[in-house]
Image 1 (tube, helix red, strand yellow):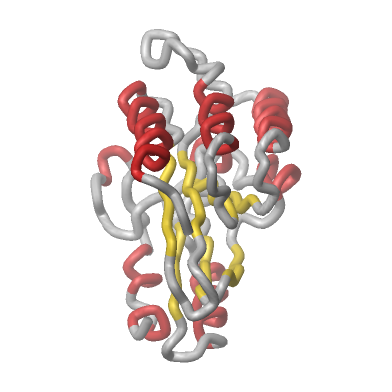
Image 2: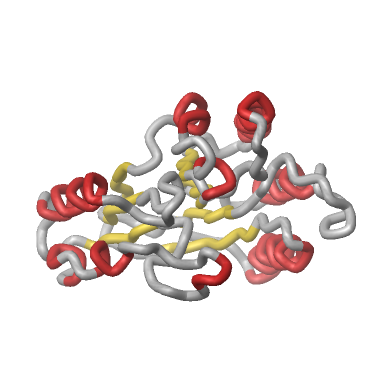
Amino acid sequence: MNIDRREFLKISGLGTAVLVLGQTCSVFGMGRKMGMGDFMFLQISDTHWGFNDPRINPDYAGTLKKTIAAVNSMNVQPDFIMFTGDLTHTTDDPKERRRRLAEFKDILRTLKVQNIKLMPGEHDAALDYAEAYKEYFGETHYTFRHKGINFIVLDNVSDPTSSIGDKQLQWLDDELKKLDRNSRVIVFAHRPLFDLYPQWDWFTRDGSKAVELPCLLKT
């Protein structure tokens, strides 16, 4: 994998700048050698498409598109891109919610990388239990495997109580039991699985039940 320091700083700097403005498109990369060659993926989070307060972000309509342009300009394209929630900004209007999700989906089509993974944030899913999100992007929790690494995507935002829920916890336990004890696992969750800052909803009510699953602890 050949990605130089200048290129990395260009992408991460864009994400940091947007984070300061409060409408985050933070971009992170990762490469691992697994005996099958290096690979890199990007994580893009909290794009909040539909946000429209110029006092917080004077370029709210351009941030996401500029991020995608920056990714498309990278000399080395990532194997896949993971969008970790709050794709759109919250709205009480179901029609507006779907309009924003549809616009976001259209914008994603401009990415060179076609291997795109998505998960909801509370802005996408908490007001309707992810009903609209599922219409456009499918399931809110799932697994996938890439070059020897097992990725698990959890949904801790569709339930307005900030919980994963017993049904999904059972699913997680079943998925983990399928893996070899030496398997490498990466877990994505929009909210932290521990009490980082409950006052801002930065926690998962039953996150400890996921972290303490025997099959997850052994990885």
